[in-house]
Image (cartoon, rainbow, N blue to C red; front, side):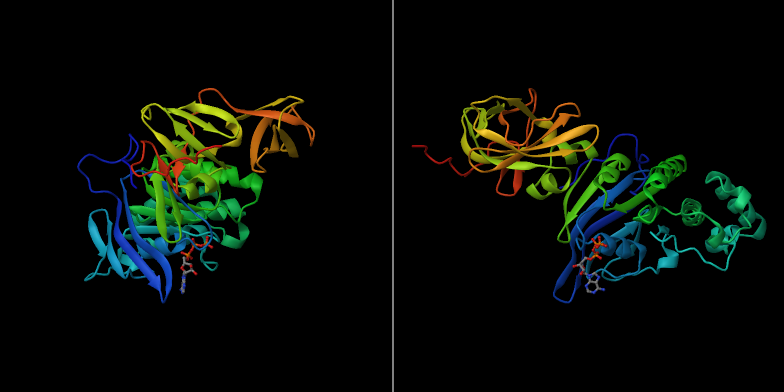
Length: 377
Ligand SMILES: Nc1ncnc2c1ncn2[C@@H]1O[C@H](COP(=O)(O)OP(=O)(O)OP(=O)(O)O)[C@@H](O)[C@H]1O
């Protein structure tokens, strides 16, 4: 499930900055990662997201050379760094690392931290490179300080400068903002992304935060149980999730049993939409409804009732219990609040083209051998 990279990245004719082909790593009987396939062109910033234990860190460790794959091949800027017969040590891969805790050397000054990976450069060149990097991350005035004399955001910028200094082909960022408090986080994230873009650096950024994954990544890779469920541009991952898992993990989603009959999608709440190209179908599916697509109208005779109201500031999330006992959620503007117990009619906002699932997979064309909808009495 891989898509073409977004326009504007990659260098014509150049190999991808990073390629994983069939990369597998098991730990005894537990699956770390399984058959990962991914190609990241130069200049892309890919975000890697998934629940705890899905294999994100294992993927980074394999690329960094801190682990060996059991099978498959990893290529960095056209050079095979790991496969069945070859294993390049971490220090000889063109891979930079930025960790959550920054992992700076406490006994070295800022400048010497940044210079750490540059020992092969002549002294004058090394000094120039360190100066350029400190200018880039706006820390030249703190070059002689030690890590404990820096704020969390400054430490993170030093870690980024240190990772970029040897001109890596790829920088791996393992939850780089999670130790920063909320107010600092957004600023450091903006600075980091700007620095990566300015230097044209290819990045893989692991995050737990869906908004971060969608807003920062030129492409988002969603992992689950050691496999890649979907790798695509953020809009596709959110608006056209490939699987039930991606639909529920990336944003809020409710699922209702539905039917596509002669190109008309219906479910418990009535007609949802037309489904072009399904004119000859009569298929049972599940429809994915996002709370921002669900509209409510108070109506005394309606069979659905508001079962919960959550105030989120700008918006109010309404939980609605349908006649079947199933629940859907609806975002309403902050000045709309239907009290618990209100009878409401539920509809889907005009123009919505919801995701349809057969089993756990999204379908865009009428599936062969799809389940027939139950015959209603
Ligand atoms: N050294 C190890 N020995 C045994 N099992 C391991 C080892 N490292 C990872 N695993 C297992 O491999 C799977 C993937 O772990 P990994 O650390 O890559 O997940 P993750 O997505 O990074 O999780 P988190 O978000 O919690 O950091 C998990 O089931 C984990 O228990």
